[in-house]
Length: 224
Image (cartoon, rainbow, N blue to C red; front, side, top):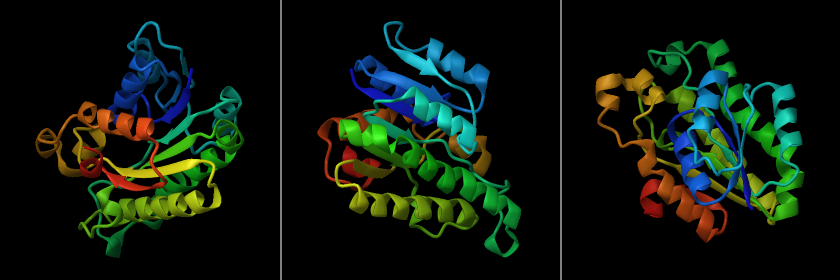
């Protein structure tokens, strides 16, 4: 049985991917900050699935250590947990620097630290890392400078990791706009409601994992 660790798994794309992997027979370790939401999400998965839910903040070193200890063998690490930063989204000219530091801690430092903590398990299985990116990493959207900068940094970390760890597949994926709480916080509930559900993206990610292409950056369109 293959084992995946998914961060930000209590809702949105993380939960949609967890459901898809569970239906495919994967064992799952799920984490998110909200304990009640996380355990509700885990409870709602396929009753036959092997699921462990460990609530906590991936920016917390102690929590990352707990996660790494829970997955001595790991086939897939999904770094999905992410912060948006200050809202309404501020222009860079007035971007709160403390908020930007916190955002880099959540969106860049925490994923890299979790990769470092789980690399022995991933190397042992010839596993894969899936980092969730954004088109804001490569496009100059007004107001998205802070968030986009963190995703651009995560993209380059993924790129270099792929060169340094040839035995581990590394994919960084822009899933496109989805109907999530984060998008609603950024653009408003009405505009966010027009975006596709995260469940429409999960099958594309499943195909990526199953095909196991060479490390690289992908978008939802290239996976469909």
